[in-house]
Image (cartoon, rainbow, N blue to C red; front, side, top):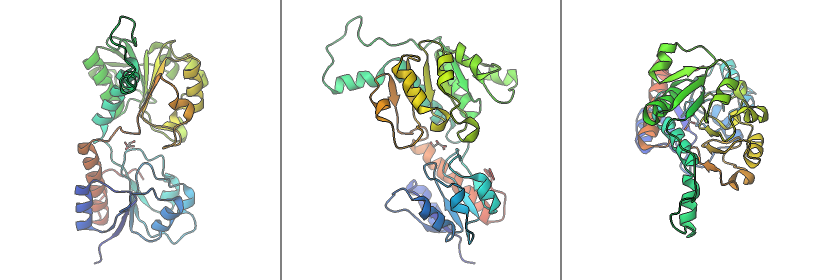
Length: 323
Ligand code: DGY
């Protein structure tokens, strides 16, 4: 039996590429350049499995037109809003993701952003690197205290819970959250958190609002002009979820006008494009989508894909099938 032909759209951790090349007839993206939508559409006609990442785009158009050979998309990432799942399903293509293994590191990055923006870590670093620090004085670069404040979490899945745990047990914060479905209060209490009924309830209570819901149509622009206005004066927004959850133009306006005090962002609406007006603001901390970027987590994500496609081609149900 010939080994399944698979294509990786980007370079992956070398340990994972080694395992994939032992098990499959694997093609690697040696130059590590992003693939165009047309190139991905061609790959769907040439490979048994295509292994995309969260920065690839697989709209309905890549699945249209027939002659598709691909039977599984083994996505490197937990989010899959970059794949038109209905269109993939209509072609009988299975889709898998990589949940669980990036929970801690993404929650850690959310904490890093919250602390950095509240305590002006980015600004301080820039000041020292520019040789502009004039020394300690009582009024220098005054930020906002974090310990004991209220954090509001939108989306209480794995990462939302891990973030709540850090905030409550690490920083003595009061944690409230909004979640589409009801969470057992005893379960919420394990993370030091309590559920509120609406997004607005969370926004009006929180000194820091952190987004942990999926991207895609259902949450597109969940944070918009009206919701920024509903936030407490002086509050901060943290986004490690997906760029499209926030109306970026409305966020920039809210930051420029002082409607909210600051933002810590790891994700953007049109990555890797970050608007000039956002980059010009001092009251934002901007990271380049680093949530899962640790050696341990990226290896674990890759090995999840290995497990998913191995099970699939061996005739078993892949553990992380989402379609
Ligand atoms: C994911 O897996 O969805 C993350 O955004 C990657 O860091």
